[in-house]
Image (tube, rainbow, N blue to C red; front, side):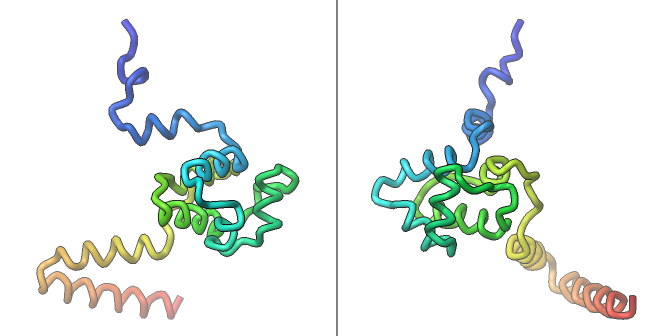
Length: 141
């Protein structure tokens, strides 16, 4: 009896990710750019704040990718998402052979704000007092 779960993952996103797990950055960018035929490498470079020669060197595999600034990887993810392409930071970090970092500062702030808004007002006030106390302690240490 085979493990049905491994053959047919319930999560389509996980299945899509597994299909492209061994891609390097050049292959990933080529695949994602193919999904937006009206966009070019130059568009991606401009949209991501990356110089075109640098992006082109990554695409041609003439420049290493292991030390790319994580914010540049996230910027490319954001550009593709604005163009309607489904991708994740995980795909980009794995494509350059690096562990996927935790959420960005903006993502953590958004999560904190969402949680804060779900609390009753009395708990919101208590949370603010706790945060202010933590800040005071961190300034002393």
